[in-house]
Image (cartoon, rainbow, N blue to C red):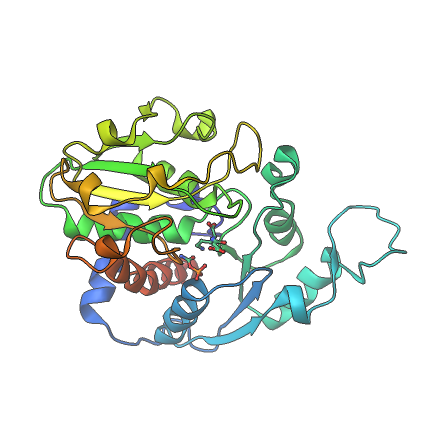
Length: 313
Ligand SMILES: NCCC[C@H](NC(=O)CCC(=O)O)C(=O)O
Ligand SMILES: NC(=O)OP(=O)(O)O
């Protein structure tokens, strides 16, 4: 594996899932990354991604450099040919080239601005790092995808499924803020590569990018979608059609125990952080159906498997 910026960087998903599960079972350190440095740049907050990836790198014997690039770094210019007489102090050309001398792998988190679809879809931050860095680049959640989260989700479903082809429902839920489509995009992408029956439930106006959802059934009735579900993946996202807009905030789509009744005693997943009693009710998060903590725990092994592949390359 050269880079890990999208799910298409995975050659064989099933093999990578099995590798991560093996790493989880062994739960030991190795020296695969000895004398190598992982540099992580965060343009947005993080708890899981930051700490699980750091832990994964350390389990592989790597050194880790972390920077809150939004607060501590110089404001970066990404536009080619820009006349830099405004507030941007450093161009990505120098920044990426310099970092490539300090780091053997660079990992970046950069959320979308959710103002302009085309700008966000150009993935300017991630792609500029890929273009100007001379070392592998890892996506820690970008404008349109969160492939480390999606790999974790695939691992979690693989280890918990009790049937050959479980029914997996991705359901939208309300949230007060406009959130990226990155997590649901990558979740849909990874589920479409797995042997599952995938159904997406979201209110009208919240259909995800049709290029990503393809022929996956999209149902605008949550109750209908949840019938016989084995896994319910809950996530808010802002509208893709009315790009970046919040169209609905009432609690009609909040996941409660009542809503789970017609499911097949479904396991409930969420990438976290989750707004309790807005996205998912306390009774669900504190109940036996929730696997969100196990899911977050698997982030380490997803990151470890990816870093290992990159180091082996
Ligand atoms: N990395 C996991 C989720 C990150 C982000 N959530 C958030 O920003 C939630 C913030 C809040 O609840 O205020 C998202 O949905 O993509
Ligand atoms: N799920 C996830 O990416 O969490 P953080 O935003 O805390 O990293």
